Amino acid sequence: MMLALLYHRVGDGKYANPWPMMDRHLGYIAKRYRTVWPGEPLHLFRREICLTFDDATFDFYYYIFPLLKKYQLRALLAVPVRYIQESSDLAPSIRLSIPYSSAMKGDIYRTHAPFCTWQELREMAHSGLVQIASHSYHHQNLLTPGLDLELDIAQSKKILEEKLGVEVRTFVYPLGKFNPAIHRQVKRHYDYAMRIGTAWNMSWQNISGMVYRVISDNLTSVDQQFCLKRKLTYLWFYLINTLRRR
Image (cartoon, rainbow, N blue to C red; front, side):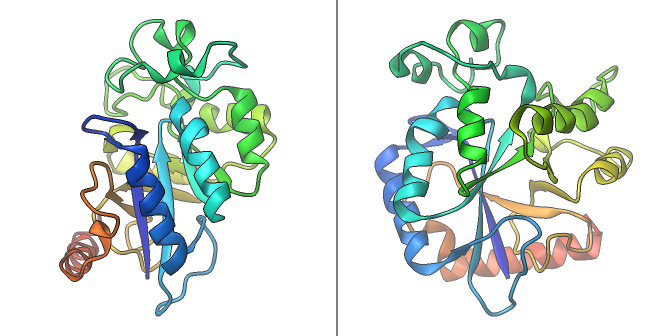
């Protein structure tokens, strides 16, 4: 069985974990689990973790990438293509100062570069430690009327592959919003799709053609996601998701 963990930022706030917690948490995982990427063989009785980080904000490059090197862990990084610039000369303190709630507003992504740059993404994508996924182009609710789904789903993949020189096989739903028609469109372009599901994964497809992820922001302990009560909860939701084919 495989557990896919979902993280956003390093820092303070609802969608974050402080750096000391992430350091200890990833160290805990490194000692006990094998990290996997979508498509790699899964083993029923082996403890396996897929680390996933949404939004590709600069703190991933500044804080998490060094931790992946330190612990020799691998992670999937979901990139919202619109907000990526080629490079930035801004000081890290400026780029890290933008809160989660503001990073995608107006021109902040241009003036303060709170997201990883193409230059930084290329370095990580070719490191052997980071696999790139599409997090759409606009990072908007895909159910929004008038949204260009071709751009958000198909073209975001094409841009990532052309800019980074890697194959992109995974789509991570922004805001967790989609419907069956959108999911069919995603599966025409990607081998794997991810959503929030709070469940174990028995395969990279499950019955729904989906990978379920467990929100792992605001951790209170390094092993919070691995206690017996949580594991039983993941099993319960896996069964519910399977019965509902979701």
